[in-house]
Amino acid sequence: MIRAMQAIQKTLPEFGIELREVPEPPAPAPGEVLIEVTAAGICGSDLHIYEWTPGYEFVKPAMPVTLGHEFAGRVAAVGQGVSDLALGDRVTVMPSVTCGSCAACQARDFDRCLTRTGIGMTRPGAFARRVLAPAINCLRLPAGVDDELAALTEPLTVGARAVESGEIKPGDRVLVMGPGTVGQTIAVMARAAGAEVTIVGKDDADRLTCLRALGFDRLHDLNDTSLAEVTGATKFDVVFEATGVPATINHGLGVLRRWGILVVCGIHAAPAPVDLNRLNREQLQIRGSNRASRATWSRVVDLLAAEGDKLRPMITHRLPLARAVEGFELARLKTASKVMLLPNA
Image 1 (cartoon, one colour):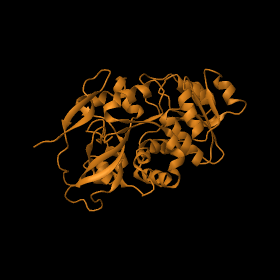
Image 2 (tube, helix red, strand yellow):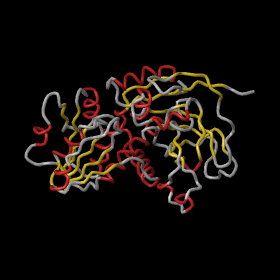
Image 3 (cartoon, helix red, strand yellow):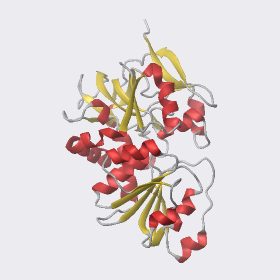
């Protein structure tokens, strides 16, 4: 008899999501584990898919697909050949699944896999009670990292990768444009790298309040001041764009020092105009940043074990799966920072 469960799914290439009854996953295949999801965060990417903004057309062939890729849980079953995970192990999961067969994978250069799939985007995700994942994608959690903190691992790796891309050094003057979850994780990781961090937003009072609770004080709402006033006489060494607003790219370039680096972290619904003369004459660099390596994931888990409670203010709302649409709307209206869905609540 096939058992059913509730899941949040994207069913059509238009605005919205649905709470649906779907079959539970089958027994794990060789190399897989079945995970009982205990906490799953609503990501900015989930919000883009909910709104159906340009940039996520690759999700369409997978519909209907269960969303959710920032999550933690407990191993409920293991497939053949899995020896390093056991029933009951608590894990967080790297959602990017490599193909195992392309030239990069054959060379064990998994970060360069060209035909990967994504848990919660092109394969079933974690906005459900149970989800399948390759055992190799799972990281066992230390005892001191609870499940909802563990579900912050994925967004924190995005921030960590951005800081790696920006080559942050102690004493660097850093600007983060956009105080949402990605901006928050960039700020946290840049501070950990020794940078002086300034964060700006617009109509983002609640998220700036969240950043204040995380210990940041150089916070500015651009409704109340200008970017030039925020910058002052000394321009920034590195600017992180985490808004997804194309015009922000040129604004960011305008406050970079000569030879500075702009790291693009947002997903944009339209092309961005770029002042190429400024880029050329001031020898600026624009870099993209997205997915983190397994080594970075491990480093973030260690960070959570050491000071996870300091990062807990990022989580502003906790909701059962049945109230997921409410959580998406809180995020869409910028009322929430990180909304955590609890499938077993």
